[in-house]
Length: 399
Ligand code: SAH
Image (tube, rainbow, N blue to C red):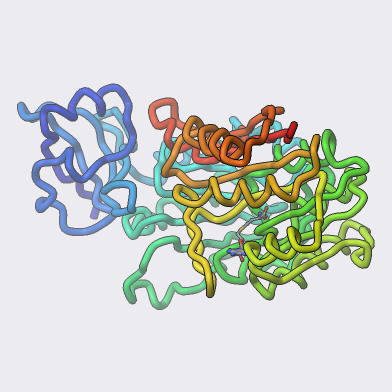
């Protein structure tokens, strides 16, 4: 049965909800004990019981829920989600009409009005990612809405929350429609990607780097050697090779990366024998490269925000300066370092400061060629700029 619960917001937070801030923080609400189940629809009221906004209760590391509407009488049902999904699709019309790109984000959480949910498109298949039990509890309404709005081949899902033993009869990534081949081949700016919709948490490509990949291919790669660190399926290497790179070297710790990278090269008709694919800890590889006096024209740094290997713990906020210093030492003068991070813990300004410090500590000089944040399909809410986690800087090493 549809039910809404009233919660009281502390006076000092009323203004920000009125202004459209979408994240419901734990500390802004007085009486959380009123709500029992994640997925509850909650009305946030001021201390005089006047309606401010409506949202849902769902615990993520960011907060305790998301605002869904400023309209007191709006019900959060399938019709509500139909409206949201329709407007998200309209915003991405260009993508749906672009034959060269058949993989993109259709719905980006709070950027499209519903925090905690993303929907990605892979050539007719839709992949929903649920970020809390709360949003997952609204699955039926959301699926009903999606099915009524789009023509789909099949629908898949990923749960990005600790299910704590719940939903055992719904453990599958496959939801409905046709099952996808493993892999399906999608396109990005004319380049092929092999996508596995049902093979662990990652599908084979990070869609948010699309503009960066294209820039490497179209503006930087020609005739250059490229080292791609934390390479995963080698997406940056593939684009560099197609842009005329003289040779790419991809380094990743995970065993799977060798086959996955080989596959990406082959489905784009690139000779794999001419490319290096190395399964190793990046930090060992840096030492090896220095010992062997290896120098590259381009170095891509795209580490996870946090990673633990046998010998190293890497945290982007603590260790990025050192990572840059390693890269600077094996980059040719005049060469380019593509420094990327998806860490939401620090801003572009801080990231630029990391770059400044790394060069300063090595007595180096650099210029910034260009920088990137999230692409258009990863829509960011006006009142939640911190949702734009991606920071990529093209740095030219002058000295
Ligand atoms: N740059 C990739 C995405 C990186 S995902 C792309 O464009 O698709 C992060 C990758 O870092 C994972 O594949 C993981 O295996 C790898 N990784 C984590 N720690 C590592 C380390 N110390 N050395 C090498 N690879 C590492």
